[in-house]
Length: 265
Image (cartoon, rainbow, N blue to C red):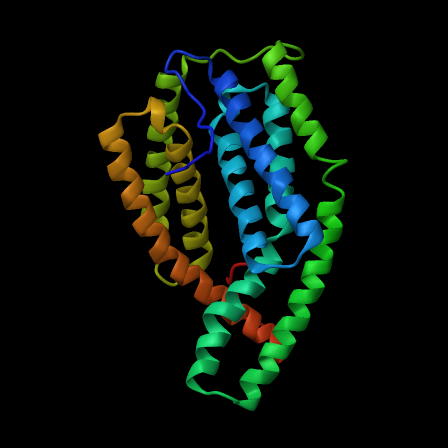
């Protein structure tokens, strides 16, 4: 479950937009800290930390979208999506190196083909890292100030009228129920060899998982814990499938071959 050094206190009777403002502010602060670290050093764990922080914020923006003005909800979906995507290519190369190439080299030390692939992967990762840092350097000017301004407006009641929404407790239960329904539909439509659908199922599962973590205080504890455990187990299984598909794509890129159709981008 999500942890904080100074946990936020949510109340079932509070307005959903107020809960969103508090939770999103904490995630924006975490993203700001990640940007500070990434500006001064180049470490695998720092890229991963940014990915996790932006995914949390993306899940919040999606969960609370019905309680936000339509224009604001669209803006958050777009801008947080851009933040989340910025570190994606670097993270893919990191996972490829750590979970595919390193184990292969442990089994076949000094293999010239593997070493050549590792060199190519390192060069591609360095290129992606430079592009990521250039994108993130702009984030302090845009979109972070726009997102922070929206939170000020939400707290002050400035700007477009808020949609009618129940209190946080009923709102959270409805969002979880609707997302579970959609997950079941995606699961029925997904096939073992359809990595695109499996990737979509994994993303939607992450949204629900992070929603449960953020709103655990206002959801039924027993049901939430059981569902969370089920989602973690499914995420682990789907993660292996998607990571293998991405590894195949990156290996093809290193070898100068066209990847098979339907692989995750």
